[in-house]
Length: 449
Image 1 (cartoon, rainbow, N blue to C red):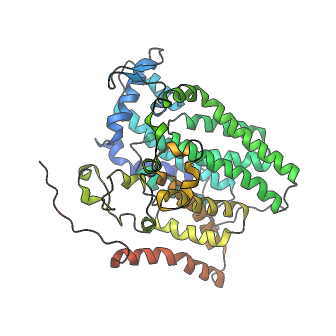
Image 2: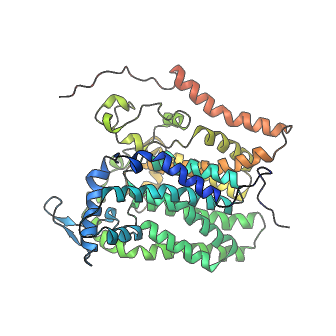
Image 3: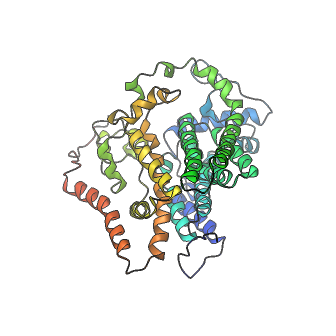
């Protein structure tokens, strides 16, 4: 008899309610951008909007913008992967907002829409993993508004990658575990579309996660005696074909971008340059205290005292941030304690740990191994892999919630599990509040000339 998702409570929400909730959370969070004159900042104004407006002008006229004469003395446009020229939502918007009239509000709304997509995407993945509706909603909201998405709102390439990632994994899981050809095709199409949104680093990190997931699920089914080696091999082939389809769809962008990349200084990236933006071990406390080392806002961007981590550049604030909510942290720890011996639970625990160790960059050992592999050594800021932690903890929080509400209140294991889950966040909070872990410098006025 097949196992069903645990019932989190006797009251069941209508199936459309979660999607309404996700729409409301998105509107409330971005109410200033939707209903008033607030706008995104930094690279959104300097790179993202100009690129989209230039692309829209040409696409609406039936032209492919191969060259941009307005940057420097002119440079390739279509071959620059970060222009995300072939990302389907961009193409659709380019046609709608043609003739060079590209409302900045419209582009903001497209970016905001991806936060709604991220929540739906995570919700559907969690339901596939047999997490209850309530647990899946917790995971979805946590992931949709975690630091790797929210703090990169002016880097839509990253937001768009992370928005579709859970949905890709959802269909990949179905393709591998049930050997469904339709799921193979859907996975490939979603992956190809996502890669076209223009973030090579996120593409590489996502591809690594998905590849490991295919092997983990396949080999795990053999270890748990759910499949024979022959059937597990076929399952993994299904998964690899799905990834290959996604990679194939990207070739329309990959071939010209590869030629342009050959002229980039990234071909001579040293280890020191590649590890700029390595996570410092003590930054783990920001899982419980997100502003332990300060923060950066538009009005404080040039005030170095706002982000006081060893005099690091201000932009490393959002590139090393990974906060996903204290409740999610607690439930995620509890979920890890209760689900460590399951195939999916162990996968997310292992990938969260892997992401953290990799993100340490020059402060750890794992990145130095990957630095010598193709592609990895050409990318900076290894701390961006901390999205693994936010992603996995959100799912583990869904598991943790279900375990909590379905367990007996007299079950000592639950009490021990909750106690164990609370140790780290309490330790982090005390360490920051007492100054034993983080000692903030004295605030001083910034001279503005």
